[in-house]
Image (cartoon, rainbow, N blue to C red; front, side):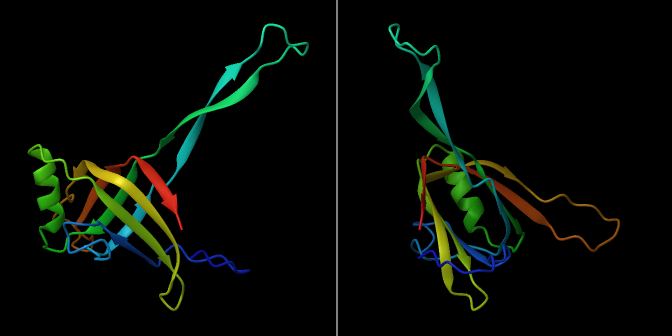
Length: 151
């Protein structure tokens, strides 16, 4: 699905699907305005044989770890996201495949990232203040997950 071109894609045109439990993997739960934290890090172990002539260590690939992903959206009055959070808080294991899809200017998919076995780690509600009246009520969801796939 990745499409190569000379001009980079804008980071403002994307969809987020929270997977089964919300009407299937292809359903979009809400208009998320920010996605951050996509990434992973490979760990390496240092190793050296005792009989090696060169006095240096080798780096041997070990395990890897994925970063937590943070999603932000304007509060839209839907309780579907909070229902998932509440069921997990009450002890239900409800790991999902979360898909983040980057779109081109014609709103056609060009890349996607699948977060496998994603679960909510932290939810932050909106900051409410009666001073200016121009800010949007935003909620934030932090997800942890087992693995990431790129397509």
